[in-house]
Amino acid sequence: MNETELLAILARGEDSHHQFKRDFSNIDALAAELIAFANTGGGQLFIGVADDGQVSGLAAADVARLNQLLSNAASQSVRPPVNPLSTNIQTEHSLVMVVTLDEGLNKPYVDTQGRIWVKSGADKRHVTAREEMQRLFQASGLVYADEVPARPATIDDLDLTAFAQYFNQRYRKPVEATGQPLPQLLKNLNLVRDGVPNLAGLLLFGKVPHVFKPAFVIKAVTFPGTVLHDNRYLDSEDIDGNLFEQYRRGIAFIKRNLRHVQGDQGFNSPGLLEVPEDVFEELLVNALVHRDYFITAPIRLLIFSDRVEIISPGHLPNHLDIEQIRFGVSNLRNPALASHAFYMLPYRGLGSGIPRATEAWPDIELIDDRRSNQFKVVIRRLKVGDVNSQPESRPESQPESQPESRPESQPESQPESQPESQPESQPESLESRVLRILANKPANKAEISAQLGQKVVSGQLNRIVRDLLAARIIEFTIPDKPNSRLQQYRLCRL
Image (cartoon, rainbow, N blue to C red; front, top):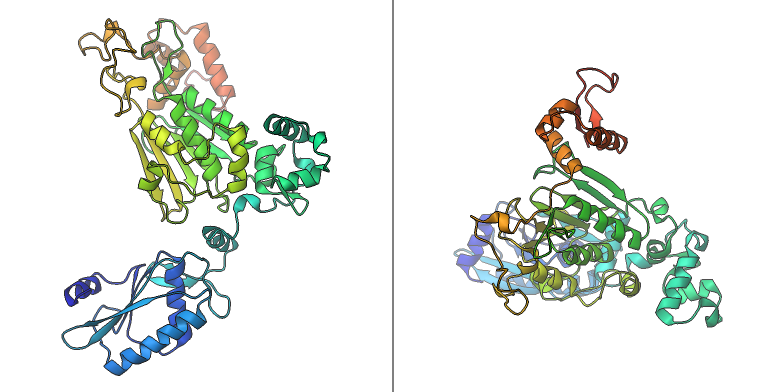
């Protein structure tokens, strides 16, 4: 770093990775700054600089004193010790010492009183929240959320019949053949700790895991438009149960809320999802297995008219970034859970889920949101009426035409002038058409019927309206007078 580069950094001011200090005389104060950097992404400490970025400077004697203080703080007042590097930059009038420290690999780092410091914006703070401490221990591999006992659950709260079936399927022998007491066997498989089911055991085999861990569910909502703050919705479900049940119901929610396309199937075929189902299998399993269970929050499954978002609590662990996971680099955040999920869910545990999903459907955006501490996957949907898009030919890695797998009489894409020769979308269900009408504005039955192209209100429409009311997907605009001649229907508000 030269003087020009130094002055450019000082002109930008302090942030989470650049701290300005006039001087240090207290070893504990210097240690706290080093600890905060080591626990939070690393950074640079500029000594001889005022808070406003003006160079106050250091004398040669100050530099010698500070180097000794830095050495003592890093080796004696930070636990475990760290290895900062110092550089002296000569400015026009005096010296500035730049101390550089990378993010630590052995978190959490503490001071001599056992306090944990982290960066908070341009400042630092003392960590006191248990969950935040747990995540720091998790980052260093000292503790895993899925191995923490899930008190007050007991072994009686596990579905032991389901466990016995799993054990027999995986090991090709019944539980009784092991000759071990059930609690010991569960402990050996890392599903129980101290006689209590750990989180992995509860989530995989719990009878009602949401009773003990109500936040570890999937919140699924389908919106009629493209914005989250819309107070209308087309479908909503709180998906609880064990992980397999959450996976099954999550996939079912996606399938009933996405359009189906004909592709190269026959006219009477049920059609294919507009986005290949395999994509959602990979991404939903990835969210269930790799989310941060130290964060008390649900997975969010949000379906908009133009995209699907799967939002998992917790940003990418350790030093992983988006490009690394695109190429299959992985870091097991929940090793006990992952070891059993391999045999219970469509999960391979090789870091291959994200690469497979993006290969099957390249129009996927991965967002590692460290500020909000979440990982978001955005899957773009096909545009309505886009007859030139076929889900099976979406990957960029496939050639535009594949004569070996597609008859010449059926080209990959049809000209826009002949959409009738290859319709993409299956006819939309009457229920979906009703919901889309009400997504625009409230309407009565006669108005709905007219927009459907019906001359009179049909018995089928009456049945659908009753079913949607019972399911609380739509509601009366005049709830106190259900038979009012002014009665209309609208989507339920969130």
